Amino acid sequence: MLIYLKGVKRMIKRVKTGIPGMDEILHGGIPERNIVLISGGPGTGKTIFSQQFIWNGLQMGEPGIYVALEEHPVQVKKNMEVFGWKVDDFEKEGKFAIVDAFTGGIGEYAEKEKYVVKDIDDVRELAEVLKRAIRETQAKRVVIDSVTTLYITKPAMARSIIFQLKRILSGLGCTSLLVSQVSVTEKGFGGPGVEHGVDGIIRLDLDEIDGELKRSLIVWKMRGTSHSMRRHPFEITDKGIVIHPSEGGEEK
Image (cartoon, rainbow, N blue to C red; front, side, top):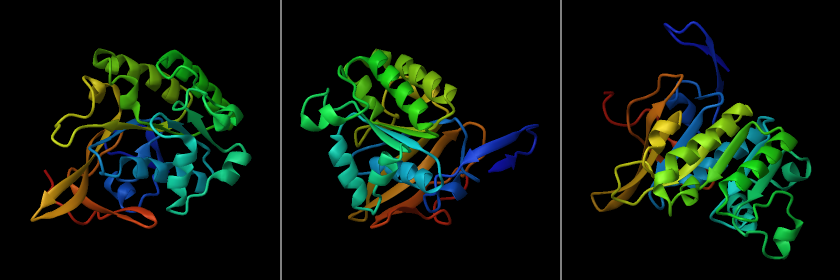
């Protein structure tokens, strides 16, 4: 989708997330090649959001890569199937792949996988496996879940690692989501300086309001496009995330 922004003398090609309500909030979608941080605490829906983004891309004919850093690839696919997102056929066709950065190549299943990171603490190895997977699948969308795992024990390296990944992902033409974990009370985005290294930040929250847990999200920044400045409620249904763009606080 091409959008002409007022005052900008170039056309912006956008990637539709396909998540109900999200593209409206983003005024058309994520600018192509943007690296977006999906930040939030436990239970906010970060992984579902990112898997839905990949699945919708497959439905639109856009190959995708899912980098599993915190779950076994088998579990990733089982979790997706809960929402009806069955990726096996796309995997067989070479249009979808999971980069296994979780098992370290240990186990019977890992021996059959095509893209395995043997040393999960080696960012350079991850980068090489990721580049190969993107090129071979011709991926247009990439999810890394979660990027926090790469620098949780070395926070001073967070910004450097983000920039390494950005050079690869953006350079190979991918629009990517990096899942970032924060604690329930944390105000930041999951690592020192990471907010400066990404093109966009979408913050997901789960708050107790009048004795009830309610989910909401806000687009903190998104390079290359205007976007809603409001916080919007959303829900997780049996078909995935549904955002309510018409609801929320006053525009700031």
